[in-house]
Length: 287
Image 1: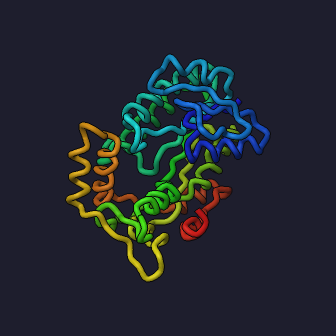
Image 2: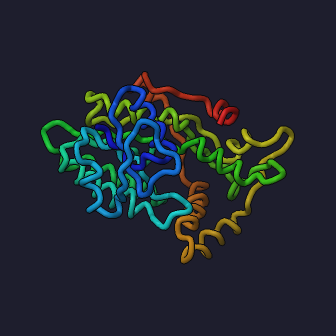
């Protein structure tokens, strides 16, 4: 049994589909029953913020995939609660069940990173690396850059009747964007290939500024619009007591203007030649 925690999200559903197609027994874990079931997978409700809910969710698992994150703008959670503390609780439950762990992390995760999510993913990686049950590592870490489809959908959602998407702030700083389908390939392979235990797999795509990415879904002859920096700053400040997750996303967007977020996908593909690399322009045409 391979259990995917966060298995009803965009990445989790793709990983589940790959594993089911490969003939694997798959269990999907999330806080609430999905409106659209994950085909071929059983569902068990649990919440990584509630450690007592986890032992039953991972019971009988050979591998547990940690694919959850605490950045949903419409949720009342944080990366500290989900990516750091939740991962710690999940790793403890998985190891009590005798399962290996595959963690979905982020390219650039570091303790001193100015963006909270990157700091919490670094803490999650530590939790996974520490305390292996045996002499050999029982973990695989998949680091991914920003999911291109998620951002493309976000830009489309801001377009309105004009069809012109809006970028929060200047959107000039290069960010590495990757296809979530490529990440799903890495996560599924990490779950099923024991030779990848103790390995870190980096999955990256192309460096584009948010404005360049938005241009891919902008009507011909038009340019993306921009939400002024002052307005984004106000959103990140005023909403903090009422919509903390949305306010956090706004603050992160501003921080992204000043933090190096580009990366070279070459080393990851050299280490793992089976990794795909889908062109981002292709995603914009079909997603």
